[in-house]
Image (tube, rainbow, N blue to C red; front, side, top):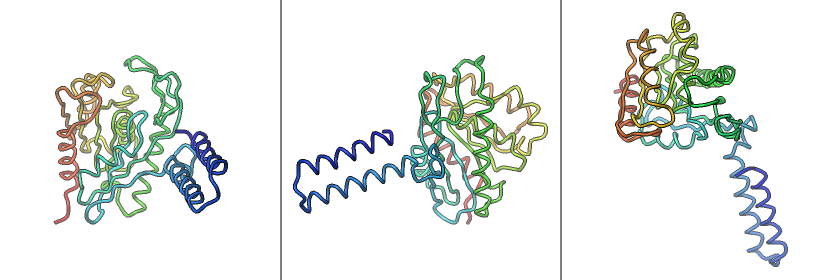
Length: 274
């Protein structure tokens, strides 16, 4: 629902109350309730953030003392809310999860429709042009959130980045271009963007051998399983800590088994304090 539609519906509620009801206590209650709901929805839609296109990241607190962080980026058209719920179900002991929402922008693949997107996607063929400028801009956003976690006292090597689909692509690219050590990468149903630049990036990267968990559904019709395999083969040329897990019959989504594997990877990489 857009902000304009939301305000219109709120205005209609005021008109209904004004024209159809007498100014009773019930009338005033309806008006106040409508205004409260409108303002609350506007806040969650991003009106309370520093940018009209960006929402403040959702935070999933650790169960115990916060000693490590995971910054996880959603896929195309999604928001941070869904993955915040999913990661919250893992009940991570010492790892805080940060789930940002991408800015609203047109996506060529979807006929120019505006939606949450980390960068533009031209098509789903391996030969399609990549939005290099958009990928680098999204990577800069992720680097900013890494710095924010460092300000909270978490060293970069205790910060992991990750994402699903488009978000995972940003996480992989960021890990290879960040000039400080990270704790690892969680890459779900994704691919390596700007892959032709990777061999050169890996030579000077601080993260060419960090732990990477790649997970991919064998029946994925959008980000093809072969893309995931090729990404793993590319990363394995220089990273011996990269593991790839596949899931029969899983499409462009997640599964309970995949999340068990993610949980194991996170708590193995950043073990809870005893």
